[in-house]
Amino acid sequence: MSPTFRQALVVGAFATLCALSVSLAIGMSNRSPFIVTVPSSTITTNGSTELGILTTGDATVTRRPDIAYLSAGVQSQSTTAAGAQRDLAAQAAKLIARAKALGIADKDINTSNYSIGPMYSTDGRTITGYRAVEQLELKWHNVDTTGSALDSLVQQGGAGQVNVSFGLADPKAALAEARGLAIADARSRAAAMAKAAGVNLGQLLRLADYSVSARTPSVGYAADAAPTQVPVGQLNVSVTVDAAFAIV
Image (cartoon, rainbow, N blue to C red; front, side):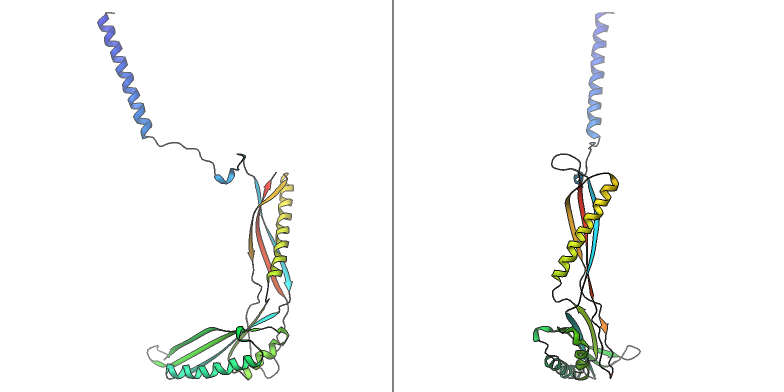
């Protein structure tokens, strides 16, 4: 092989190698990076994988209601809005006076609804008059005499729309008891799950509380000549918790 041919061969090989290097660099720069990720929820501070048991707990305690919520309303109609308003004001004054005469304090008398609006003919084109409505929310603390209070509001106070529901003036103690029982229930369920899975239950990691309001549904009142009977009964105070426990 002549020196001239050998030199040409070396130069060609070097040029080919440079071209391949450039192509590889360009190809690598155009490719998207490949990244391996691990969900952060499975990482702990010591670098080990976090294992856990998720469960719920439920509990219900019963209490006798100690407060009644009375909803009492009046309404009026007139050919004018001003007339309906004046008539409503007179009726509301009578109802409020009756509530106070029963011993209901000012702080326990609240307006839950007040409205004045037109009434229309059957075809909806003509205003035939105006209706005014006022609804009061009253707190009655002697639940055993709820029936007689309703009778008085209707018969002497002129209330025409009446509903009643029962509740607890301070439900915190009942909720606290139910919450403690619900957490114990969640722990018991988690322990059973851990035993079935052949692992040991660790410390509590997370806890969420879902409480249910301690108040009965509203019940309508029907006027009757006989004294109204309103049984008080019992309230259910319920709590549900979501819990997460570690596995050790």
